Amino acid sequence: MPKIIVSGRGGSGKSTMAALLAKALEERGKVLVIDTDESNLGLGRMLGQEPPAMTLMGFLGGKSAVRDKLLASMQQEKKEKLSFFRDNLTLENLPAECVSWHGPVGVLRIGKIEHSMEGCACPMGSITRSLLNELQVSENEWAIVDTEAGVEHFGRGILEGADIVLMVADPSYESVLLTEKARELAGEANKKFIVVINKLDENTGPVLRQELTGRGIEIGAALNYSADVNQANLTGNPVDINVLREDVGGIIDKLAG
Image (tube, rainbow, N blue to C red; front, side):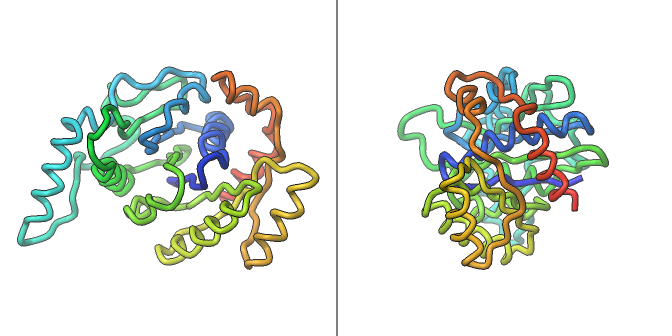
């Protein structure tokens, strides 16, 4: 089954989309939600579970240790693909302290900004890239990657090991431009690209559709604005899949198609 990267501008609904997909897919198998956003702290709450005890970066020795390994790899005369993990990496043998499982849904956090002036997030990107390249997902298993805002993760190459880029576009001109750029970058990497338009109402929906289709961007699915989902996000409560179950099911059909 696929490894799916969820992308979009800040506030477009990436984390909500990742949580809704996980809740819908848990009825079909096992789902790992990978939190790669170094500043987003609320994804676990959207899923109704506590975050894991340790980030993957912490398990690997922290940012300094990961940075040292990156530098050592760059200095090698014979360049080899950088790996942080053992062979045959699966959902079952991920480090237990780095994954919080609640039934068939697990949350793994790559790393977070912990201190002022601690440096760039490049080591986190390298860990994510290695993880997605090496992680094997079997039938009835999915990996959903919640990314940081924008397109930096495209530049870091984390989509190399993914199968699908799911772009969340909300009603804003910035989102339209970002979707156009993301389509270009996904195309360069030869990745399947699906656009979901989000937070629509009767006024913004037609305009957003026109802006995207006018640029030759195919719309895969749409989610209307939900006051219930918005309220859950505001109060830190889990999102209710039943509010948008049919629409999310349509997105899954697109992903599987």
